[in-house]
Length: 422
Image 1 (cartoon, rainbow, N blue to C red):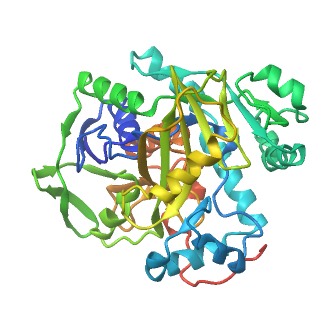
Image 2: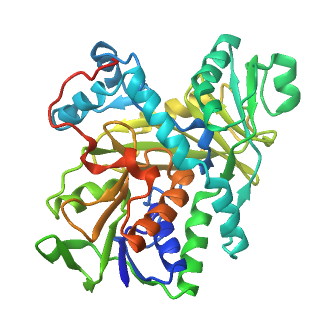
């Protein structure tokens, strides 16, 4: 059997890795260079955080509330000029902002992410080299009630086996646990079940190991079209030549939407841009930190920390909006005492965001030998390995794993209507 995996980010590489471990011949096709700075797997926060896996559509978000999200300083931002194109997606997104869909989505993501730590340890044991820290996460807030609100939002994870603290920590306790926090922080809690990776090193390490395992890479190869008969894909035509195969996996992150369209498969997914940059703190944190007040995450990386946050819907635009990244920086330095007064290496990447905030892990229906592995939103480092392993099982056995049932491509209703439970 030969599989062609389209996409050289963390999603595609994990699919390729677990397919190759099942003795499948694999070719990875990517539109750029694997590990390129423009890839979404390059500069993200690198959090492996299954206990924080919840879909983006939150209960109670109303159309009136969405109107406020066209301000450039909003954590969740819709560029006004892109709204006409985004409106159908946005209306569908709004239908999922209810308690029932949120709880169902959280349960599905909790089950999918359950084996992530074991699988990452397995990669290390297999000789894949990357920078990994098993530090846990500290949630830090200015007000105690805000820390309690975040902890309550995670409460449902207990029933899926995740370990959560019973209560928040006060000012003295949170500073003793994480001395890098400044005086603005008054409360928080510690979540042990979170690891951090330097995202680009994981991608590079996986690609190196795959080459050692005999996986072929075709880089700088833009997909032009698919060639097939009936419900079977025979080959993919790229700018660097044609690639034939028995199975085809579309795992190109946000770019999976136009790829699937070349097969006539429509998926309700939009690119959501996130920003990050590096800071030099006066004191290096002992943990990853979630500053819940400003919706920003901190990842310790040696002598620097990476600050990541915001969600911007502006299409396939990787340009950095200085207003947004400067706003995030101004907010972050209110919580972090800096050694140097400015940020370094500003970066933007696109997250694949479905209307319900859940991945799509399924056959690219009606095709029998084409598959979708996308829609990981902000959870790429958490779910890519479990999704890749289960996708390899699905391809080899021809049977959909039970954990994939909530992630079917045909789950989206055609009509745009407020869903029950809203």
